[in-house]
Length: 396
Image 1 (spheres, rainbow, N blue to C red):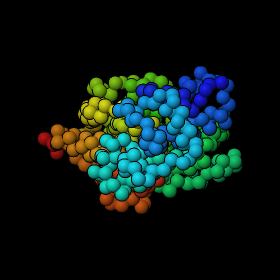
Image 2: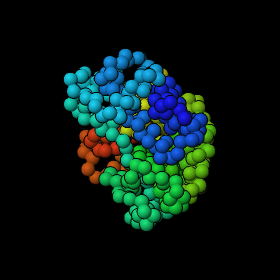
Image 3: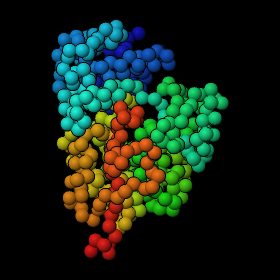
Image 4: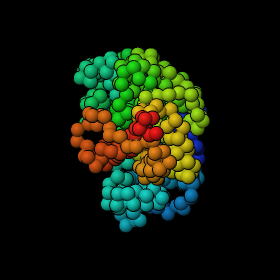
């Protein structure tokens, strides 16, 4: 048995450039003796340390490194301090108390002010619930809730998404018959609010330009009532393969996958294009607490976002719509990218979101572009702006 599995896993996560779930899966494949309950306990402890990484180190007097890496002994010390529950965040610098790196804390203070940034940081460090989206081609939300409850799964409607259901965080959904039948799909509630903003309709040609795991692709396919042509583009073939499996389970035959670098032209013309751009993911820290402790080449990320938006925009037909979205909280990944794009593309302009695309309760200030925050809305942080391309006769 390993010396200290929590410390080993914490060190491995901070040292890796892979996603945390991949690091965790690799670790437990190498240590098959751990049962499911032991694995869950180890991961919960490691995530608790990741959410409090900076304040734990400050309390222990440990030196901060620019790459936030830890030695095995430092990791052991932080694990022990986390388990003891005796670490206080009083009388320490605000960014340390917020458990955010200085660059992120300062950026959020510039956007929201210090008091609201502190509230946001607390929300970001709370574990996220498990949300699912109802496939309305298979069932209504009320029916899906009933079927989940019949299986003994506690299920309640999400407050914002009209097709969302909230489940206990540790639900083993894959074992559920409701999941296996494609009635529900795992998708965080904030993410569920993005695809409707594109306004996809039946029989249109629609492109999800950065499909990733495909959650928004599947949502678009349902909104299109399994008609038209829905293209999912991504450079990761494994993700596209998984998306095809998920689309089949959901009963969607209008989804077509294309592997592409996202940085080179694609021979497609579409009525609507979604660009869910790769980003720092600062809005998803509830589920990915490791993201802020990893090295981010922000300049390259922003350069790629601008290039991806340029490439995707070329796919939009005259009169068509382009939705740019990120799960970042940073202005320079959001508003600044859109401002730069519009300055160089007079044929595009802001468009209002479709009627009833946003849930009731979001203020006009939040309506366009849309900004979602964990501390205000209880969902992951998102940004979304809808653009329209002028018809040729109007732009000439």
